[in-house]
Amino acid sequence: DAFLSGGIGLYRTAAAAAVGLAAAVRPAGFLGAGLRVFLPARFTARLELRQHLYPRPADDQGRGGGVAWPTELGLVFGRLLGGKPGLP
Image (cartoon, rainbow, N blue to C red; front, side):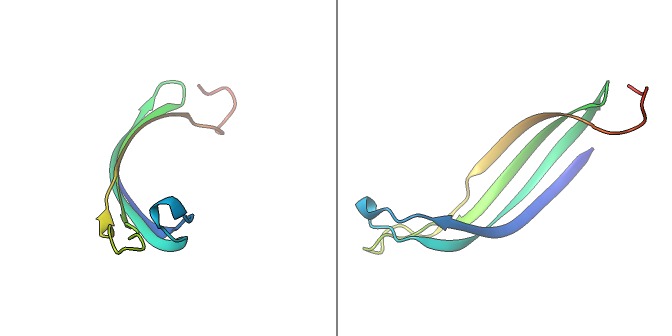
């Protein structure tokens, strides 16, 4: 199965006096796509690529800022639970 994913939320940063950053709560989001494969014995494998987006904080001198867009690549293995007894 191929899939698309996305989400929005908030993230909180702690103050870092050494570099002049204040604590703040900022918006964040991500877009992603992936592929899920169902394996024998109710196991699954999923490969997913996510592109995160969030505003970079500026320091007290006004340096920095802009938008950060780190990329995440994940490979996940899982096992399906439930179902009827006696089935693999």
